[in-house]
Amino acid sequence: MKTIKFFHPEETFTYYIEKCFCKVVYSGKQHQLLIEIHSTDELDHVEDDSLQNDFAQVILSVDDFPVPFSSPSELVGKSIEIPLCYVEQEDEEGEMEDIFYTNVNFSDENFEADQNHLSFSKDDSGTLCLKWKGEVQDFTESTDDYIPFELECAFLPASFEERE
Image (cartoon, rainbow, N blue to C red; front, side, top):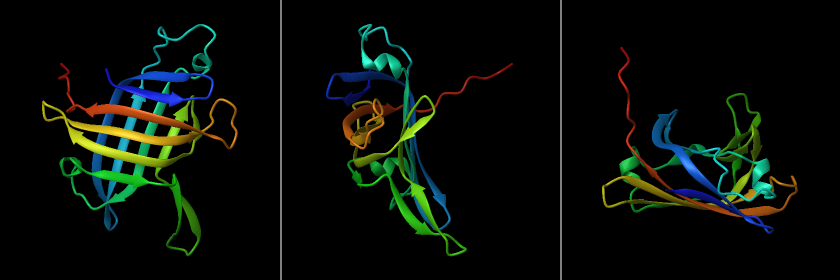
């Protein structure tokens, strides 16, 4: 089972991945990477007094990040660096706006994730896999400190059930 780990100074938080997807879409004048990874809310493996009990589920995402690839299959063997979770860009009216590329969400609260390193590969069955390392704002104390994290996941092809 693929996991998400947060290396908090007091303990390592371990989450199991429930679902994930990876897409490359064309928007405006560029291709953009979209990734979303959801953990389960299963905490049976966590001690009763663990900090992790206050953070039952996590969602990590990459949105609108410009890439020189037109499909997920072109990501195999590539690494992508996203040093900051957002950039400032000028919109059509000349106003500056923040474009967020990476996000870590606990209980509908968003936290910045910086120093992101994404490495893509294929496993033995040909499935696209991701290793993602980065740092997220301290979500336990809401401080300006950062907690390292890493995850591994496999983007299985979507399966659809027919409805009668």
